[in-house]
Length: 133
Image (tube, rainbow, N blue to C red; front, side):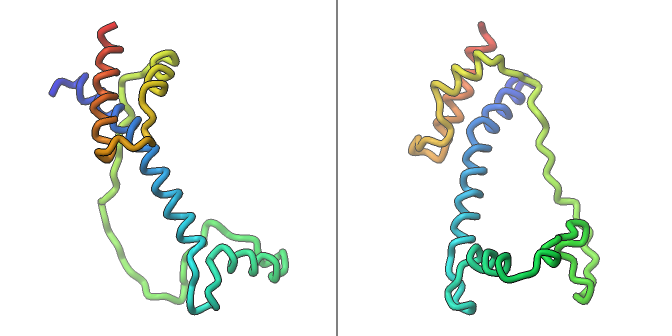
């Protein structure tokens, strides 16, 4: 695979799958926030948050984001991991006109019947046409 093809494929993957991933995460978040929890009278996490917001004095709602989620009384775990994924930015830049044409031809959130693979292949074909112009 040539380097230009690599960057073109990376851009096509980002165009097709990032909106799908974001939509899936948004759907999961919405489902989670609205699911009933049996142990708290079938309240949802969102309802529990609203209840706390309405019944707690305003001063105690201030969150220190530097220490949020740290349990100083909990067990200490020394986790050393190198599992960070870094996705490079594509070196290929589409013009506003090219991006508009791509958006008019392919909606990455629409169902192509193949989990986005057909959209990816069509996106690659369209962007190859851009590079030939």
